[in-house]
Image (cartoon, rainbow, N blue to C red; front, side, top):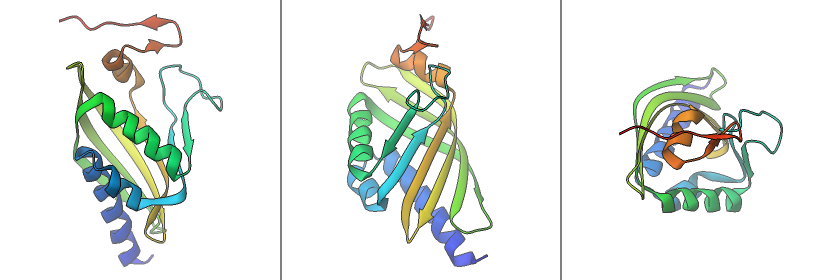
Length: 153
């Protein structure tokens, strides 16, 4: 294991999350490999079939998705991070809590696990695992493509 590469992967991953908190699209683009893949395998549909969850390929598609995200949230914060680097020095897992607020004022608190794969100083794959029910509540999305839940005030 190359200790320097592990530190580098951890640094890139935490810089990614900081750039998300700051809604800094330019910084995120600088960290992306041209052929980066972003996946969010847990989703409101409850399905795991290809096409049923977010799978974005390429810097352009990911940048467009992140811009759409930044357009509907006023704030993003990920905190209480627990970082675990893989022995290969190319992968890091980060567990944490998150809080964001939508442009409609809805607050979304969630738990996350992120997986970052890095090569040559660029993120080649990013996976984000979260509780999809919490996001469905915040954004008014259907769960299992059938039911929309509402929060009681």
